[in-house]
Length: 249
Picture: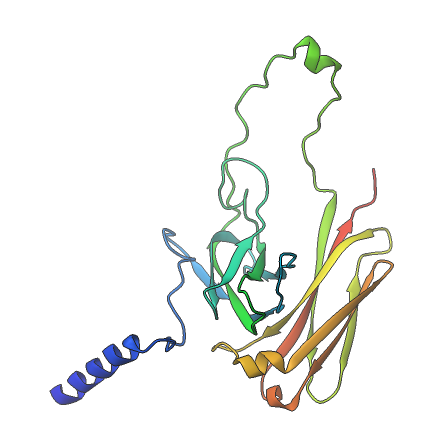
């Protein structure tokens, strides 16, 4: 038994010394510092291969279970050149329930010199309850004559709402799906992403076997996705995100 343990340890050290040989997954930090945490791992999201100085981030929304808010975030990536961030809400203090709500939109961009087939996996650390923080206690500054003549300012509100829907992508034939805003809303912007619902990161070939394109007409987004037979055994989906303007008051 001792010999087996020694051999296993030697193999582990040798594997760590081989360049490019990485473990299947790492321990995320999404639950660090949280006394109670519900870890939520999203799918592997294909990042749009791009090059040059005008790159568009790949967006993906991941949600917490009901009756919980986001207390921490992290991500796994298939290449170290991937930049990942998330959109937080305004307000103070920076805290769960204020900066984060029940869902987060991750933004990932591949920053390498050459366009590579890459992916990222969003991770959430969710905490039970509604979270929240104290309201503003600072007093507004006294208005001077100059500020009184200036145009009045307004606190930022919530003029838009994000509509998100996901659809399965079947291999062997094109998948055409659409989503968008409600009849009383206007489409402001849109995005879509291809997701691989696997525990291990998809290979470069598997990422290349799924292609998608979107067209916008009115307040609807139409996505056409194609998956080759190489990914027929995998569960693949497309997520459509529509940023919709609410009706003006």
